[in-house]
Length: 358
Image (cartoon, rainbow, N blue to C red):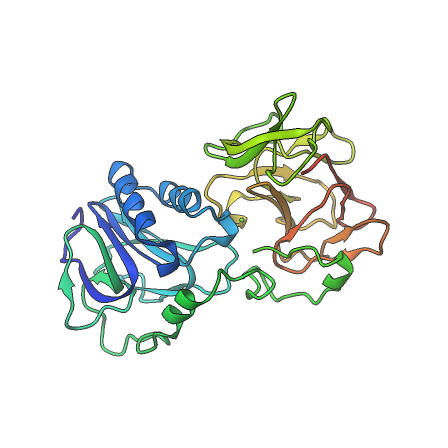
């Protein structure tokens, strides 16, 4: 291991993965083949982006529906920690012993910590076994001793583990609101029952480092969602077998007094948008709108597979969606799938139009 201390694990139903520069704990729903692929990839390049992209690719889940996980990656001096779902990551360092939880976060929670003396993912029993590297079925993995009295709600409770084994992935309709602020009551039923899903420069388009989808192609060659019969770009017939390909542009975002913006990557919109407003695997595009009523980080446009989603970032004045000539509906503080023709209303006649999205 590239850190001091002996890594130990306790037998259970989750999946622990350990490599030279880090270790992780995965939900049983991810499966052992996925864990083995992660082990291989992380040995080649030990970075959080590699971990998340591999997990997303191999499970077929979008970034907002990844299985629960906790991961700790060391660069020799600091630990980069990330956790998703109901797992708790317990850390001891001079900076404090505050545990890190993914509960209620739309994507995952992150932290960077130095001088770590103990780090536990899940539950590591006193009678645990050493782990040099590889993949094992465990309920916890970690190193170092937690101080007396360092306990969390999941210490003696395996209900979280069983829920992940028995249940299907949680839809965002049932998931808690992300920690951007208090949930805003909304008339979601007015959005025609559409799925509520479970986070630069503005001058030129940038394509994310990795953005692949499963697609079928039209007669001209445009990739399309496999279920479509006609191309969303040119309306030609869609045919042939589905295969993985680079995700195409997912339409346009039309902003007042500016050229249309191609939807190639996720985007943070606000008066003074910041890339750290939402945890995403790749840096988002930043779009600054200089209107006094717009919050600094107001809105996120997220690309998840073939879907385009909108997420209000606890903005001061809220965000509404206009759909099919219906009255505006205020966005809840969780991502909502956008449809062709939707209009995002940021107030004071500031309207963003979605054009040619799948």
